[in-house]
Amino acid sequence: MKAIVDPDICIGCGLCADTCPGVYRMEGDKAVTCVDLIPAEQHECARKGAEECPVEAIKIADSA
Ligand code: F3S
Image (tube, rainbow, N blue to C red; front, side, top):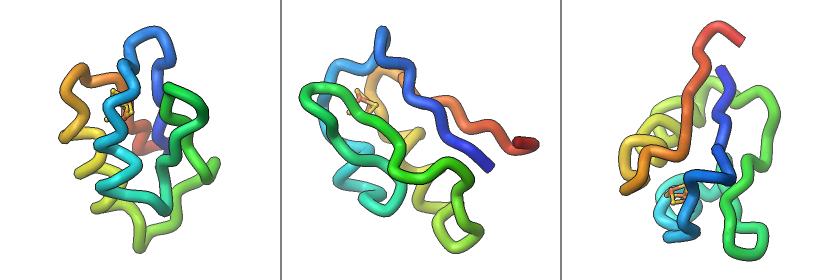
């Protein structure tokens, strides 16, 4: 599983990084992912971070 933050959509609210710091971190005023392939124990947290994004900037790719 991967998470992709679209920098054109992200408004830098920081909620994803607060919710799941093991997967998302802030780089300047945009979120980026800290890991390429998200380990199984972080899946739930990664999804929650994506769901909480107010502008839906995070896409979760399950198959990758
Ligand atoms: Fe950006 Fe959404 Fe995270 S706006 S900082 S991707 S919660």
